[in-house]
Length: 363
Image 1: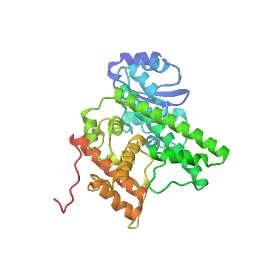
Image 2 (image 1 turned 90 degrees about the vertical axis):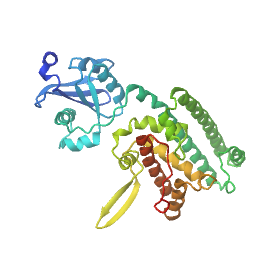
Image 3 (image 1 turned 180 degrees about the horizontal axis):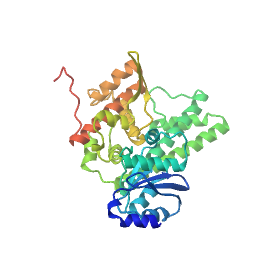
């Protein structure tokens, strides 16, 4: 620690340190470099409360630390911030490409992060404040519960299909009216299959109760801001989706264009173009999955209500109908989600309510 103490005293060197932190499940490999790239310290820090903070407290206040965005980075970032240093969350895939290492070791990774930071080429990503990180767990947990509920619904419908138990056209199986039909259909199943389906229905009801409780908690803990109220003017966006979008975006100034924001939100398709031919694939997976879910949920609301009065004349509904006629419902929902993501960019950027696009013929 003598070298670190000397660094803390050397005023000329205080802003010249670069630190790389390669975090793992049980430990972090750390490397400290000076402004010339000389390695001043390499150390493996065991993951235990206080050890990360203790090490970084010996460094000058404000020292930048390149931290790889692995699954357990929350508490590491908290301890780095508590020590007075500045954690910089790093995109691991882009950092790996920029490092260009043939071999892979913890020391090489820590060295690569510190070097990229020193050269000013670190592919950093936005690090939300600690309070916001905590609040985002509420809508994210609701999203996980909804995914489980959907999985159970799909499994129940699969069981019914095995025995040709299909509801009449237009009847929604999990609606209040459809639930009566569903209870009767379950009784027609073979004994053990019926028992399994009944247990899944009980689990479905419990999950629905938990989701409703979580939504009440979200509304009580996260007040609807003026920004969220603006987001609610978009088609298919209510209280919960507005909260998800606002909490996940943080600040829209991070994105230079609506196209980049739509890509970050995972609503743009993969493109393969060669020899004058272009092929569009599925939507990107390298994205913010929570924003992607929010915009797809809003697009699903558009698809469910597109034919109703008050919806059929809206741009989103017309877009859904037009794309569905040529490429099917899934692609149409993706197109609507992309439109909503780009619209959200302008709503947040201009701080104005959503406006229906005007076609060139109408302008």
